[in-house]
Amino acid sequence: MVRALKYAILGLLSQESCSGYDLSMALSGALQEFWSANHSQIYPELKRLSEEGLVDYQVEISGNVLERKVYSLTEAGRADFLEWLHREEDIASPPKDVFRLRMFFANEMEPERRRDLIAHELTLHRERLARLRGKREQFAVPPEPSSPALGDYMVLTGAVRREEASCEWLSWCLTVLDGAATDTEEKGNENV
Image 1 (cartoon, rainbow, N blue to C red):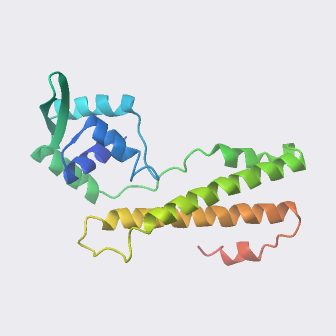
Image 2: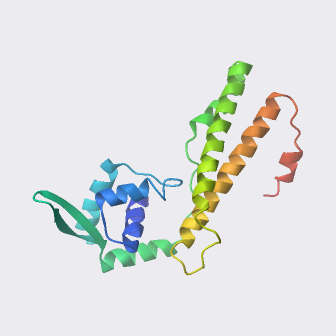
Image 3: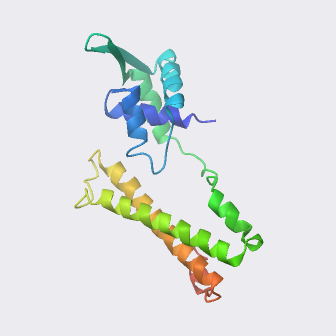
């Protein structure tokens, strides 16, 4: 089993040296649309990476007492990260989605409650879509292929498209509840 958090950390450290707190902020920032980790996961993984010789750290003193470890990639860590980057993987299992699980059993709900749940989910996805589109505005044009920002742009665009598709699907679900849906949308997507 691949330790994905290991490679998220190695990747972030390949860009710049960071403290555990900095890594936590990065994971809850730019990467949050497709990856997350808690403080309680990050620090044990950093310890393990250090024991494996994949990262080093320097202790920095701030003020009279405050110490923080700033981690950086070792050559072995860089080699391991680059090997992982080039490895082909099987498609990941679908993530667990409580809302979709509820919808699978939608026939057990009262029609009004079912509609309310779908409408609420649609609102949440529209809000997320608006946030993502706002973040994407930082890119006036797509970055050059050699730019470090290219990956961020591609992942962010993927997140925008995912949310657009979710909004389209949830809107379609509401039309199904109204009895107005047709399967022309589905027939058009059968070849995807």
